[in-house]
Image 1 (cartoon, rainbow, N blue to C red):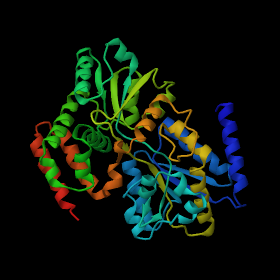
Image 2 (cartoon, rainbow, N blue to C red):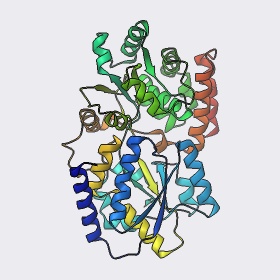
Image 3 (tube, rainbow, N blue to C red):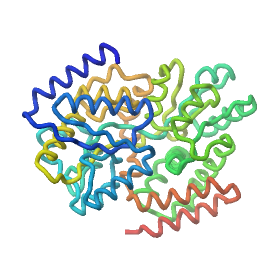
Length: 413
C-alpha cells in the first residue's frame, strides 16, 4: 500500500470517526461478489474506512454474482440475512422491498442530502414507491469496447466506431493469427453483450421498445433482425475456450496480447490497472459501437431489516461511508467505475472515464440499463433465449426473434 493511499485512508477514517457517535463494534457481514484482484482492492476501501469509523467488517465474498445473488436472497427470505448485501440497481430488489424485508434508508438519505448529490435517475433506480432501499456506490456502463493498442499499431488497424468497422478490424486480426475478440460465454456475459448490440446496432428506440415497453412486435422489425445477425456473427471471432471463462480471464487475454479486443463494462479497467496498464497509452476504449449510448448501471448495497439496534446503527454507518466523497473517489479509481456522487473532484479520472463523463452530459445518450427497466424474471427468461441462440449456430435470426418475442408476450402488464 502506498504512503499516499495509507494517508488518504487514515484521513478518511479519522473524518468518519469524528462525525459518528460512539458505538460498539458490531460484526457486520457484507455479502458481495467482487473477487478479482482489482475488485478486492476496491472493496477493501469500504472495509478499511468502515473499520476505521468503529465498525467491524466481516467479508463474505462469493465468486460469481449468479451464485451470490440467489444465495443472499434465499438467506433474506429464510430469515438469516447478511447485514449488508450487494445487488444491481433497478428492479432486482423490488420484491424484497415489497415484502417488507429491506430497511427503508430514507432517514440516512435525508441526513446525507442524497437527493442533492445523486443523479435523479440513479435515485429513482434505488427507490421503491418513493422510498430509498439501496445505497448506490458507482456509475458504470457495460458496453465498452477495450483494445490492445500495441496490436492495433502492429496490424495498422484504426479504432472501430461502428459494427461494420469492428468486423473489418476483426477480420484483420483473425487473418494475422490473433484472437479478434476475447469473450467469456458465461450467461451474464452473453446477455450483457447482446444488450450492448441491441442498444448500439438496434438503436435507442428498439432498445426501449424491448425493455421498457415489452413490445413483442419490436422483434419483427429490420432493426431487430440486424441485431440478431450482428450478435451471431460475433461468435465467429471468438476462440473455442469461451465456455465458463470469467471476464477477468478474458481481460487477461487482451493484456497478454493473445486477443485484440474485449467488450465489457467499466470494471475491466480495474484489471488493466492491476496489470500496470494506462488508459490511452496501453489500451484504448470505445463507448458503444454504432449508436453511442451510455447504458446506465450501478452497483448498490441493500440493508435487510436488522434484528437489533446495534446492527441497525452499523447499517446506517455503512451507508454513510459508502457515499463519503473521499471513499467514493478512492473506491471507484480502483474499481474502474465512476463516482456516483455529482459533487466529487473528477479531474484525476483516466482518459476513458472522461469519455464516459462527456457522453453522459448529453441526455439523449443516457439510457437506463435493463435492470432499471425490467424485472429479474423477464431478464432471466430473455437471457436463456440469448444463451441458447449463441450455443446453436444453426438457429436462424427469425427463429431467435420468435423465441425472444414469446418471452415478451409472457410479461405484458
